[in-house]
Length: 105
Image: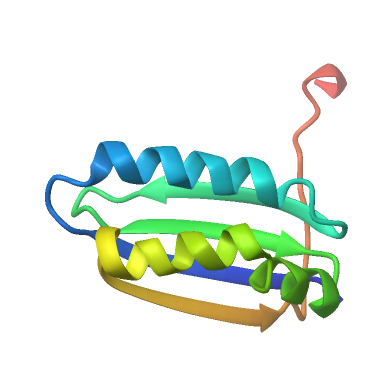
């Protein structure tokens, strides 16, 4: 069963450059975790950041949660980067995908 992690956050002032380096490092690192499916990150107009990461199962999500470099990045996030964050980890109970095929028109 697919596991979906939704990470919402807000940054402290004047930390964006340092944060982006760590965020990119984590984005690259998570791709190497067995069972990683995909990730997307967004920043809303009011400054809230949202990252959605999908894993093939609970074991791969747990492996990521316990990864030593990820644990260090989480510590830095609390100490240096975030003014607030919220993490939600859920089982995906339904999935449906649609893609318009341009060649069928």
